[in-house]
Length: 460
Image 1 (cartoon, rainbow, N blue to C red):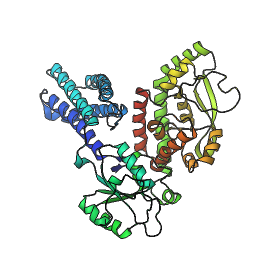
Image 2: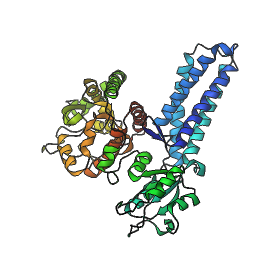
Image 3: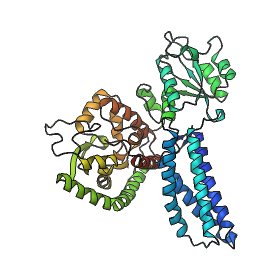
Image 4: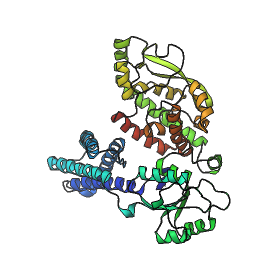
């Protein structure tokens, strides 16, 4: 994993992104330069346009999830996304190159070359998403431990990337009960250092259920680190690999003494300016959609169009959230707060559509302008659920240290939460965001939100 602006990228993903950018940029630049009379005078303009077009395609591909190695997705499903990306890229290319001041000798040839390069890039995207990874691209991982935590690491490691090279489990001398598969246990007759050298290990994940009583060979772990082997604890492993801080692997000391959780004045000011500018632009762009939505709600179920509900914001301060009404007026006629559920019969026909497309969330942009919310942050919950979840889930109150958001890391990484267990799962992503939030991560989340909306994922 490579850390850029407090966000972890797999090196394979970065190489794929750079390959796509390079393919499109080089194709466009070479094709245009071969047709203009004086290439030297227009090179900078050509490169700028090519980069703009390539970044536009990159955003489309990221939003459609074409850089994710999703092993539950079929080739046909990925191909459908590639076709959609191709259909969105064509009008983008027309807009960018139509406003260009360049005059080409043969625009038809250029258009064919451009279409061919985009098609080739997308074909490679489909292939790369489902191709077996090369051994040199994935680190060889050794799990130090053989108990419950080690088993958890092994399961999640295979789930996140089935092609990962898991060398095996090296049991601590203090671990009596071994829960990992016997076939994966490495011999303890040799030292940890010898095993690491013998199996050419790149990374050690320390996953011990008990660390007291000399269970960790500190000297050997240090020797491995000095030889270039990456040594991480279980909490850091889950943070870098899955983008979450797991509640069953973290401690208060790790949260307190670790890096992250930066809430400085500069970050606050930049985030506020970002919220004001982009929420204003989004409101202007979404006005026609919001107008049509309001009319449809009135036609189907009468007024009111909007509904307000008390939510918990920054540092526990209460505010009123505004959304398009998607449920019947008597949705909570007994006054008892209820979780939204799949196929909830309280949702109207229009409501089901706007919830699926996240249109019901658009009025929250006015909450962003007012300062109660941010574009990106944890989902704001109702006071009743916050009180309940704070009592039952450790560290839940940590998510209240940043402003709630219209979208967020948990929203794009996990389906809609409808229970205390779901809330605990989503909290693990919220903790990651609170620890690592930055303007760069906000952009990543916004790009992924586009994919969630386009694929109609997560709505209830």
